Length: 191
Ligand code: 5GP
Image 1 (tube, rainbow, N blue to C red):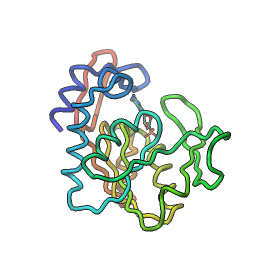
Image 2: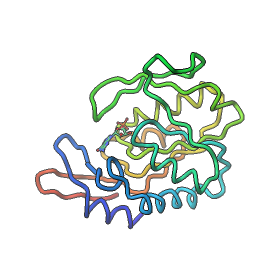
Image 3: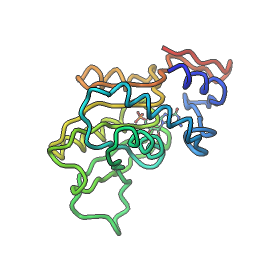
Image 4: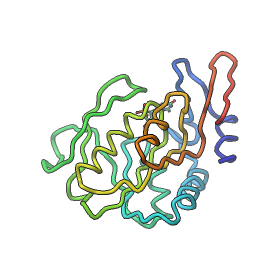
């Protein structure tokens, strides 16, 4: 998606360790009219695919999943990082390694919100090694639901997670795929 590629080139900041910061429009401050266009694009791509729920993970996936949900007219469910106290006991549970924070998160989704009839579109802001997405796919499978597809704003193609998921037979649509980026020369190449 040209619009997103241009915005990444304009406002993205490449950090050492292959991390791209887009916190001026997606990850901290959110440009809502802009990300609404990303949501609309997911709907265009998945126009012919039945979707009953959108699933994402807290916290940075919630914004983009929510605007996408406006176009799909379905609820958004977000996997919560388990904290114990006020969470349902009846949950789907998995562990997800967080690349940006270098730690393992235990995440849960209440069994009330995904069922075997659900056709789930998984949406997230970033796809890197694919751990977050694999965890969300695992949650849908535990529920007996169907993964309708995956929608990603920014895929870092060189980290391989997207291609691994595609090879497993899941449809993955990323609006911008970064093939190469370099923090020294401040350059980004898209696939
Ligand atoms: P994965 O599990 O695919 O390695 O990483 C996905 C998650 O890590 C995303 O949900 C996102 O929060 C975070 N992430 C991975 N790479 C980046 C990055 O370059 N920039 C930002 N802002 N987040 C990232």
